[in-house]
Image: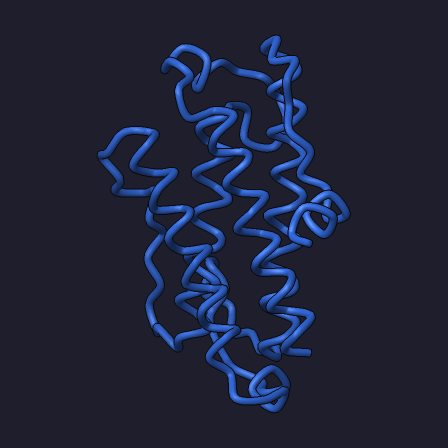
Length: 165
């Protein structure tokens, strides 16, 4: 389990970096253009992924009352992207620090955002978080095409595997 999650969190870091580089220098008009989809804009989608990764990291670290980082965020897009990459790194480090697979089998309790009590094991929570980020990165790739970006790097897992060799 540990090796699977470690590769997956490292892939997540790599793919997030590629997406960040794609949008890093866009102006506010492009970042905030309504493009439809779940969160309508590039900025809101990036902030959503960052927020979700942050919330899951807090839950995994047993924070009782999680904070949603984008709710009170006043920095610019570049600062948000740095914070997103930082939390992705923290999740990767969380996985790396687990001594063995028993750490991933542990079931932990937390409250969903609507305050509903929940329980999941660590493996499922991390797997979900990485899957969630992949889903929304796919939306961001679609947004890139919609605003006319033609040079879009692959964020496919197999590309990551080929490049890391």
